[in-house]
Image (tube, rainbow, N blue to C red):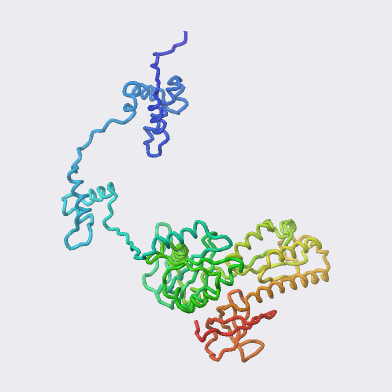
Length: 511
């Protein structure tokens, strides 16, 4: 006869006991020992033998027998460890209460707040004990938070108005959070930084040189997070009006524009009000006084400060203003997906390219491409695909070339049977279309105000100066101050030509 051993007592759980055991077994804050004991009891409740439970949980059979017995004798209390012997507590509840009350209701002599050392001196406890008491009660005397109550009598109405715009924007409208980050400093450290190393953070000098300031104007679309931005050396009503004009230029004409901004004086200046009267699609919404937290563009400024400014090193305001992306150049090479994958080795789809450029267009980032015509085996259909992609996207600028073999490239080993005449013809067609795109974009710039870098005298007329816009277009203009070369100036674009623009300075101010 097989040996069965001592009969084990049946283990039956109540619903409450089972719920508690499951909670202990799954709760992250439970000790691993308590969680294991709970799982042992739950498995034993299925009726399986101790040997089966031990094998299933990866523990010894005596361990299973121990906690089965403890549970049968003491139920849930039997799974909890008994208090362990040790040195009795030396800090009484009255002493803890005294520390907490003193921290909350008093201040030390000759100090504005308690420190661990000062509280230890007052109570006779150790500084580490004071720290543990404060930690247990969530007390941090060294920290303060500031606040400012709005005194705006229309506080509730304005909050309802702005939050309503955020949550339920009007149809056929765009909601923009607008503000300016003023006095952004171009700083350069007096000494080079020591790079980060294992066990040592990056080190920078505390002193720096100041190279001037600029102001960042930004309008953030609260729906999709896209941003219209520009920089100006000052933040007067004149600059704010220019920025509103840029917003007007970048937002489609069929959309109303709801602008959320604070109560800074330039936002309500008479010149701004006059401009707004001439542009009725603009609707201004002012935040309550002392309530800039409700303006979502402040989140953008926080990210700009953290990611671009805190550790920046700029030796001129011009360099500071160029922080970010002003142009993207893409090595597209070809418009046929299969051809691009096979010959060039680039496997992204045309739709992915189009989607990416839609995003760039929302951010008003100009895009140029590199394109090669006349790859080995390129058919008329392949070339048509390239033209279609260019038409679908409308590139700002292109650098296009006729194919020539390059050692080590996938196409270098293929026979080049495309006649040179065909290559040149296709290149001519491509460039004509790209020139049309460039001209269309240039025409759209007429009437806008552009900040240009003056590079020198005009090549066509020595009596004029030339400069370049942010999207790399040449602007010719007249100016009486020869010191304009090397500076930024604001010009109004009045005419567009195939290869250049004509501008008129809007002020004599140099940047």
